[in-house]
Image (cartoon, rainbow, N blue to C red; front, side):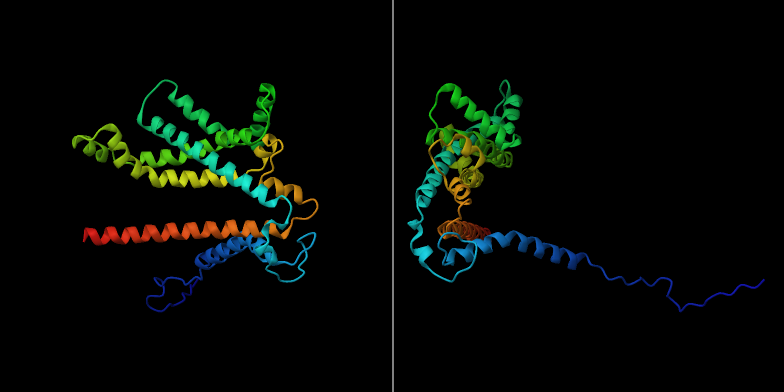
Length: 284
């Protein structure tokens, strides 16, 4: 029996096979589609803020700037937006102050029930908003507390403080204790060391926690709806107006908030880049 062998060119056995890989192209297409999907509601909101709508803002009727120049023409919309801003600012200040102190205490000091305290702080984050809102509403009702701005602020502080603690704890964990020890070696008092060394180092984390807290407070609907009473916030106004048609002025406010957020992010990024350049020049 004879066997036939197929002759190959020299080096053909070691030649790698060429395959067309879709990893890079597929990742780019997926990222583009995901970004487009996320931006569709934002683009719709911005475009229809210029719609010449009368009762509802669903069908396009023509371009106009009247909605931007007369934002408060829709009844109650400016009052609801102002209520959300006031509640968000007050809740953010209280939650950020308390959360920062709790984060420093949990990371720097040992005390009884320390682990239990950390667990309790994570419960508002893990609990559904319906459960948290209904529970707080039941407590206010049993105590005979009238619902209004005060109850909304208390409710917002309770669920925002957990996010503040988590954010600031991460910043405290990254601090170098040698910097504070150097301040104490230079005869700095505990207050001077904290305000001149510790606090400036914690400030980026505190600001991030404050921005996160404000966004959560401003955007919340479920917990606010349980504890609002006669107060109407901007998310509640949108929910109520959805049954009869959301006015175009609501799109104006939403678009303005989005644009302001983008500007804040850009300014912070440019400031950080400029600071990094100055530090690089100083170290050269």
